[in-house]
Amino acid sequence: MNQLPVRHVVIVGGGTAGWMMGAAAARFLLDGERSITLVESDEIGTIGVGEATIPPVLGFNRMLGIDEDEFIRATNGTYKLGIEFVGWRTGADRYFHPFGTHGRSIEGLNFHQIWLKLQARGGVGDLGGYSPSTVAAALGRFARPSGDPASSLSGLSYAYHFDAGLYAAFLRRRAEASGVERVEGRVVGVDRDAGTGHVARLRLEDGRQVEGDLFVDCSGFRSLLLGETMQVPFESYAKWLRCDRAIAVPSARAASLPPFTRSTAHRAGWQWRIPLQHRTGNGIVYASDYFDDDEAERLLLGRLEESPIAAPRRLSFAAGRRARLWEGNVVALGLAGGFLEPLESTSIHLIQEGISKLFALFPDRRFSAVERDQYNSLMGDAYESIRDFIILHYHATERSDSPFWSDMASMAVPDTLAAKIALFREKGRIFRYDDELFSIPSWVAVMLGQGIVPQGYDPVVDALDEDRLATALPHLREAVRRAVVGLPAHADIFPPPTAA
Ligand code: FAD
Image (cartoon, rainbow, N blue to C red; front, top):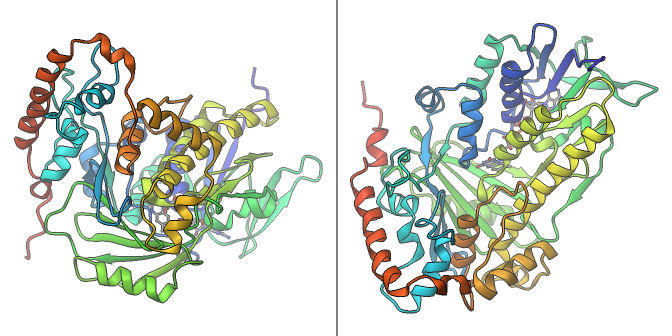
């Protein structure tokens, strides 16, 4: 029996994290007895970036009962089939990390294992040719996946690009309509209970006070409650992830409106390109130890494919996370909890993950250590597995054209990642542990894309008739191509607004 239910949930911050939590809380926590209050300061504002997502975001929207077409319209969104990586291996290469699968498993074997074996015979093409998302991205086509498992399009998967400001506003409308109370004001003080050390109330600049049982810190990089008040230390990942600066600039809408994010490496980091309906999001991510701010801005502006439509905005960050994401009666979501650079568009996902784990372990006012520890363990694992995936892109490189890339290639990586790379190099095997976010096709695409070539394949593949496989694969590839060619052009789904 829950004797002491949490009655008052207070969210600090109204960025993407705050309003994702607000909208989810409105849907699942408002039971007539509980209040949800969100405090935010327009004067402080939000970070205003964070526009590319990964497929689990569809699940979040579904959970909230959001209609996809309405959502896309409201956020000026587009569809995303994966990420194109340019220049990460040699400086002159490109590869695609698709959402969804490559081919289909045969007799329970991962498709890439069959491909690895047959590749030596020739005539099977690259692995991307078996991935509907890769082929559709290359041709600028898009459709929602087929629900028919026999269809070549069943392995297609997608996410969204959207305008971060419009996304938060969209969620805010839903949350407020369902009863979340928004308080405008700057938090200038936080009182803790002398006995438990828990946060008891927020003090606002104008003298108002906001009391609560559970506080959700969505205050951005400042980490007002978890970091500043509860003093939970920050664990840095900077020895592996050296980038600590970004400059963001929007440019005009891309005529071709590609259904994917592009990440182009440069001599000390990388540059993103995110096509939206009304504009293109661009930004450069770089390591300040290796690259000067002004030089980075010049490089960013020089590489824009469309004219800029606003002034560049400079941002600083640190890679890492708070040692515990839940402390006492404070749970941090979004940038208040930690940050991993947006190379694989994982931050919004981590917010979603934090919310669903919090709901799964929702406390009562005793704030039991068992629930809190479980949350911290699960969220710690989530950060670490994404961290490893991002480090892989930097470390597995043949680039040595700048001190940055030489250092990346020679650095010692976390043991968990070193083991994954070694296993893949041996026979192309990848194992997905526990709740790990990235699927086997994702790891395979990036390992191969970054130039890690397995020395062998899974010997179990030898049990299958090689000639039959050699006949089947080109058909499979052709079926994917034919299915994709018939899809609508992504740019036609979102025609540019016509002048009145
Ligand atoms: P913020 O947007 O900073 O919001 C903080 C909120 O707290 C604001 O409302 C602010 O007013 C409020 N606040 C702070 N202090 C106070 C106070 N004292 N009193 C009252 N209110 C206060 N993620 C992705 O998933 N995909 C991407 O492509 C992506 N790209 C990114 C690119 C860059 C360069 C960066 C830095 C991040 C990117 N992210 C991306 C991460 C993404 O931007 C964030 O995860 C997301 O925007 C959530 O931010 P937030 O809500 O935690 O913080």
